[in-house]
Each structure stands twice: as C-alpha cells, then as structure tokens.
Length: 291
Image (tube, rainbow, N blue to C red):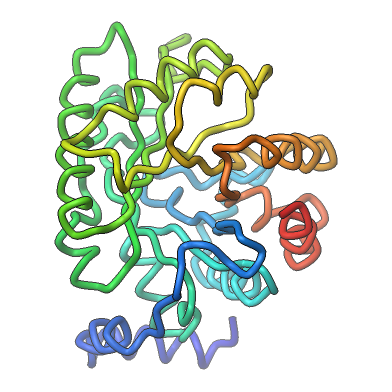
C-alpha cells in the first residue's frame, strides 16, 4: 500500500469517521450470494481479531495491516472472487478503499475466544451483532462454534450462537456457522478433524436458532468428506485453514469437496493471501478455477 493511501485512511478515520457509514450506504450490493460461476468464492480475513497472526512459517504475517490490505484488495480484484469475510476494522478499511462494491460481505461476530488463552472456548460476541450487520447493508454474519465436552463455556457459546442465528434470520441475512468438536491437548485447543467429529459438529450447528432457513455451514476438509457432509442438507462452504505445506494437495481436496451436493463454494484466507511463493493473484486464480 502506497504511503499516501495509508495516510488517507488514517486521516479519514481521525477527521471523518462518518465516512465509513457513508461508504457502507453507497456500496453497490451484489445481486446474489453466488457469483457468475454459480458458487460463493470468499476471502477470509478475520484471524487478526483473535490474535491469530501466523500464516505458514511467518509468525506475524497478518500483523502488518497495510500489507494485509494490499493482499486483500488484490485478491478481491481477481475475476470470480465475489465475497469477503472480516471484522469491522478490516471491512471498514476495505469500504474506504472502495473494494467492496458488488461483493458479498459477511461480518465476523464472535472473536472473544482469543487464540492460546485459557478462555478460548468461551467465544463471546465481541465484534459484529446482527443489527450492526443489517445496518451496514452486509449479506450475513459468521460465528465460530467450538464444542468441547470438558469445557462448560461451550454451552454459553452455543447459546450465543443460537441467538445470533435467530437474529440474523430475523433480518433475512445469512448465518455462517463454523462448527468443530474441540479438545485441549497440552493446554492448547485443537479441533478434531475426522468425519465422525465433523458430522456431530454440523448436526449441532444446524439445530441452532429458531430457524435454519438462512444458515450456512463453514467446514474444513477431512478424510471421508462425503460421509461427513451426508450429515446435513444445509449449504456449506469449505474453509482453507492453515497455509498448506502442499498447496497442490489442498487444491485437489477443495476440488473434490466442491463436487458434493451441499458444498456451494470456498471461504479461504491465509492459504490464498500468504501462499509460499507470495503470488496472491496466481493462488486466487487457481482456487477460482476449481469452481
């Protein structure tokens, strides 16, 4: 990002904070959740708000906001990319940069379960709420829903997610639920990436709220993906997760998952924003090609 662009962003935030709401009101909204390819292709950038800044072997990759915005603007400019997922600070920078016209915008809602903390499973709603997403004219909200049988904070998070699903549905907006069965291993939260665990997590997530009419699921690749996805009729998108040491394998797995009837697209963050060769455009174009 050129120095003058960064300076303009800061000056706008200092002197004209109302410009953010003006930009949101003026944003050209997409005609559909799906792009011309008939799928949802989103770039995810909500990791920093949980203190998760690592991408691959770069421990502080997402700690440089100007660099992150450069990568996001480039990714969103590529043909076939029709959406973005982020927290208020990131999405509002993109609004001011004029990068969200015609894009599906999903606000990340519960970022309170900071990575690596003792309270990580208590994933409180510290970012967007449904009213704020509706007021901004966005298309939906996303919530992380981790289920740890040994952590009583799980039920608090489940209750909050159920309320958010209902509130979003009341506005006619997508609720994107990202469920996992999780455990602590040596004090750190680890997600169980098996077909059985994902089937259990998805069935719990699908039952949250007073209606599932607007609920989508955001799920990882697991072995026996077909068996895992047989657990629900809700539309799903595939998440990218950590930067893969074998990107060709990751692309192949995404392609295979996209053939399943419930899978409607991809929501990929670090794998496309911070590829090993740093060629963001090429990584994004390859992912779009899978659609």
